[in-house]
Length: 592
Image (tube, rainbow, N blue to C red; front, side, top):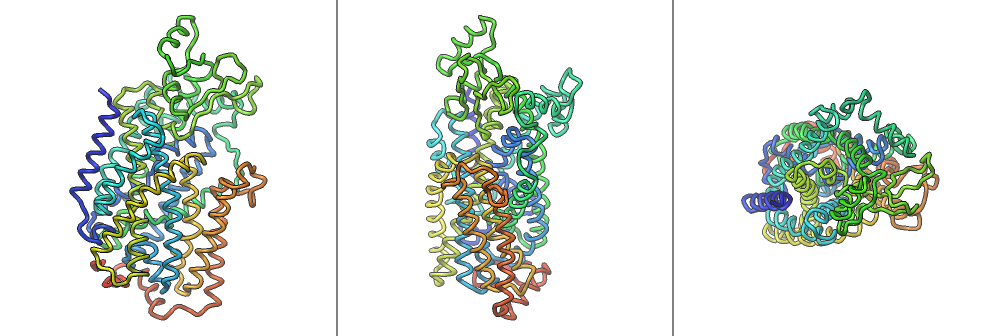
């Protein structure tokens, strides 16, 4: 029985069935699930929305490959969610708008500000969704026997059905199912591997424990092993402390400005429920995030142990050739490497012509060069196969990776479709549009976004690992949206001119910097050539500070906001004391 097909087809059928059951019948259902989602359910859906392919597939891979240096992603994303939950979520829910551009447009009493916010949201969302679709392609390419591009197209078809039909209502309940799938898919293999390596069934503790039969902890042994092979120590980092700080901060503040996460807090009945659902989401997120360092460490140990110094066997006729190598008394390269080599995501280049696979760092004491290249994004998917776990576990991991990528992709599609149909069409250009017409435009926009996202996913895979592509989206969100959301809630003197200047100051240079060093003439640049030594992943924080200063400065030299806007800012910081601004014209029920 093909367990991969069983899990993938079974879970996809479940997602589509839920989407049909929870089909949106109004714009209120399509955008915010009718404000009727229970806080615990919303917390689980938010966790699935939040834990994208970057979290499931790529974060553990980056930690495995970079060691301590990869932990910036773990720290930044976790800290950012706490910031969002405590600082912004309840106040945005109290305001009662469908979308972040809607908040910006009404808070800053300007259609121009709304339009700029739409542009920022689209830049962030399309950058983010490109990483998700890339993750889908990686999962499909290996386990369903199709190429990377075909895998992306298959994922596009699934997202199209449940996002375009179900809207936010369908997406919410689909994401609950996806959370269950992805958390089991992530933790079950980790428990198996922790038992195999350390004898401890708790991965969070196991990777700190001694290796079975040895008087040394697994982390210490791994650190020593990678140093002996010429790599930077597993417990060290090659990045400067300032760059680490900037990346962490960009991920934190970018989290608090992510439109697809913020919109989830508009689906609960009242502002107090937004805070409660954020707390539940943190619990559900922690179940995966505390396991990620263990998964990364286990993967690095198993990969080095199974590949280094083995006799290379090509994927073609692997069984016969590996049997011949064994018969000669040598150790053949593992079957999992041959399987993944067909996808192009792992490669072997026999530089010294000895037919053996050497994993080496730049400071290898024996002077040998590295001959094995492994894409960081495959570590989680390949881990059960490397550890020779049962087929049903391997299939479950594939289904989990797809669930993680597709749940976030669906949330991002809601942002894109609502930005176009609600913020651009109904609130800016066609203010007399009916609910039915808006719903048709929203579904059409979601369909077009699915197609565009698929092609962006194909292109983004050539640029960086999934988590790094996603980090660019966080930098864009931190620089462009976070300052206007923060100042819009906590400083009543912030003006529309200040908001527009702040968003443009954050978005344009951040995007230009990322483009230059990842796509343009600066692709080969080293850290010495970066501005202040800050990498493209962390530059969003630098320009966020600039955008905050510009927003405040411009606001102080322009006319103060109208008194009713200043009163509104005072009111939304006291949850439960007011009817959300502009609710009547948006067709929404009161918050409390």
